[in-house]
Length: 454
Image (cartoon, rainbow, N blue to C red):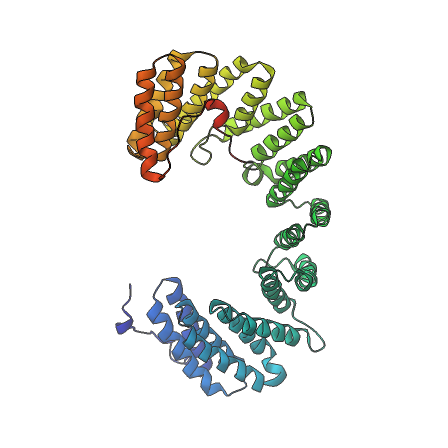
């Protein structure tokens, strides 16, 4: 790392050391210094560039650029007072330049707004955004890049303050511009759609939120574009329908989300599919269609079996829900081969001592307890305890949970003294984390070990 005290700048070659070349050189060198983490050097180079820019005259755009860069440099150091000095100078320079300084005025006001937000001076920030937007929209033509920057800033400001009536037209305009330009630096159309959908949801306008999502998805698909994030947003709307008892609507939305995940491909959509399928199955169960629920869960299990590994370490949630379904139908013995297979795959890909494997051993053991296969269940619980002791330590809350459900099994087996010792150890661990330890272990371990919330 270069010492800022010994900063040595290699100037451009002879014949290329005019003010314009020198200014550009300092600016490029400052960018490089910032990228490399040489913060002090970056500041010195930016000041050197400003000194050169001051010689170009008050109306030169390089002056406002240099002042803005220095202002944001100090902002990155959280020296907001110093940042404001440079940004206000940049604004004044842009205003003095007239029409030629329009870009500088817009950028300076946007940067000032961000500084004011950092200082929790919301009124000042809003005033800067509003004025910047007025400047950007003035004249015969407007720069779409500037407009998107400001619409995004002011629109999000209004969202944070729940000023939805003011945010909505800005975000709709932002959506139109982002669809037309698709510039990577600015919010993607899908991001803006999700902002609008979230805003409608916060207002209880669920139909509007769902409509804008579905319409946008149809537009994107017609152009051959798919964004897996929209599938996840749709799935949440399906959850809302499920909670309201609107199962037909929920199923439609979940299936639409699944279509998006499928089209998004392996990299984007594969992680969303298990959640969508388990949500779909729950809607089917509540709707009184257990066969459809079973089919969805089996499909989800197969996908999760492919995903199991370091990036997806948990016990398959679709398998847990299928176990619940089979329990309701008196078919719990059918879950055993599926659970055993999942455990084998997980152990192969994670390793025999992975802490997440302990949780899966608990799930499988709970099924064996219900099937009264106590001997094998006990060996799994003891193995889970050893893994948690080794990886998490002797006082971890997860270990307390395993000790508690192990005690419950021992009690069912009539081994009350051993159950009491295991439960007492669990209570001591819980007491270290919670002043009010649980009075007794869960009566039904399998039922109490809920699946991850989809």
